[in-house]
Image 1 (cartoon, helix red, strand yellow):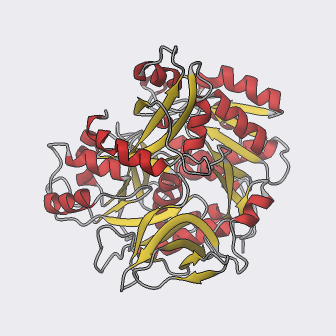
Image 2 (cartoon, helix red, strand yellow):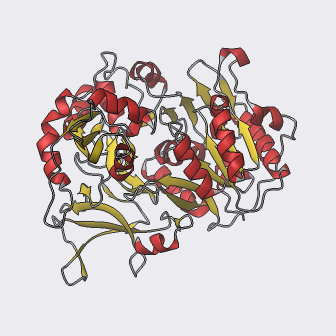
Image 3 (cartoon, rainbow, N blue to C red):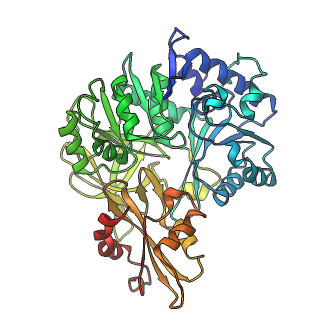
Length: 518
């Protein structure tokens, strides 16, 4: 029996192929039959290109039903799906194409010119476009991908795959500034989807309100995969808008979001218990949920948010229980099949395990844990212990009943609005600005974003740099979610005796500025 992830999903599609699979905000319906036929056409197109086994299909397109169908078609055809954040600009895309060497790249028509120059120069042979939904194309998507695919048959025999075969590569930045491609197999993703379906009690008749992006593990491998595996309808929103979410909530039973979404819902006057009357489950992840948000949400709606913990390399690792106490400030218990431990390394270099209440490095093992980093065998080896546990880089502690609380991160990762931001990457761009002597990037607590990317700059005495000017320059170089919310200027950066910048002192000094940030 094939381990192809698409075959797993298809085995749970409803028998009634005329039932709705995806509904857009403007009422367009895509039936389960539509999804099967459209994915077959695209899979046939890919198969006609003569691509080598294991070829990567890189995708940087706006969210749409067709974008999800493209994901399914890639799996169905036996190739490797590589989603990229739509905010990435040319320098970032050039790196991803050079590193992953995709055989096919699919982008939005508006980006075709500059993407084509990079892709063809790097040797990518096939470039297609996938447009956003608009009234001009009768509410359906367009672009060269669909124009080519429509000429192919709408039946396709799903390619046989083994559980260890590569299915998806998710790029996650490193503190060195170089992005790493986390390799997830069909078996990795399937095991996690099956566990979550049971653990979160997915039911017949569930409707998922999908407001997350599709290039992120949360929106793709947790939310969308959950609905596909359960044969559940999805209401697809192109992006999160509090007012639109409030309008669609009464027609839904499940909603998943990052903490920023819940903060913005609580700020909307139309959000109350009546709007949530049919919701069965609210899930939060990708960043820490503030205790105040957790408490206010329960008070306003009568619902307790279920917070969970995972990462690109492992999919989901822990979750608060569905039918037992959900504890604020924790990410719950290890999921079935996941072995999670906390370890500390002493001055002698030896590791020991932590007991309840003790803080340690989070290490995990399980069928959901990735195969390693793309073309980085040495980095992969560094991140695993001798007995096969993956070192997450996060620090946590268990309470007396085994609930895990994330205390911090051993690396300088900033999570802003649910997106991972690594300071070194931002600092390398800042340091190229004329007049900047050196910089340090930190995360400061922020009521909306969880953490706000903040830059501290030491400038030349004659430099005429301003906060607004630096921010505008950054917007032309990197994705908007990485751009600092605030820039401060200092005479020098605090350092220890070894010359390392003491970012903890910077965070302490500037943390009071969070209230004035936009």
